[in-house]
Amino acid sequence: MQHVVIVIHLMLVVGLIGVVLLQRSEGGGLGIGSGGGFMSSRGTSNVLTRATAVLAGLFFVTSLVLSILAGVDRKPASILQGGSGAPQAPGAPAPLGGAGGGVLDTLRQQSEPPGPPQAPRSQ
Image (cartoon, rainbow, N blue to C red; front, side):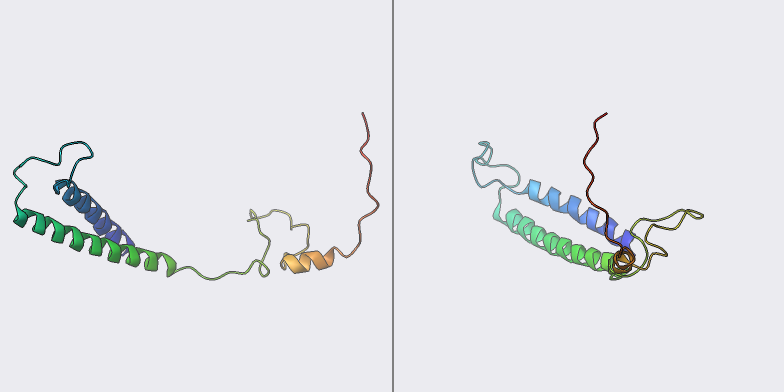
């Protein structure tokens, strides 16, 4: 489903870029806005303006659909519950905190205070 919406979204993007580039320039950044071309009538500008609005609306809708589809499978997780933070390979030794009951359990198991600070030794 998500792949189909992405393809439609990309087609809308290409169409929107094309319609915007076809519109007549209002004036003068590059000096090419003035002068009559084959796209200078009012009827064409109304069609292009409406097409731009429709494509922009559809682009907005597909963006919302893609964001909703991306969040469907997401489950909330807590950093205070569960196993250790780093994934482990099968057969790897257990983490230092024990069986990995969470951050708070690891901190509780380290109840022994550390010794006095050591001064660095010169070599």
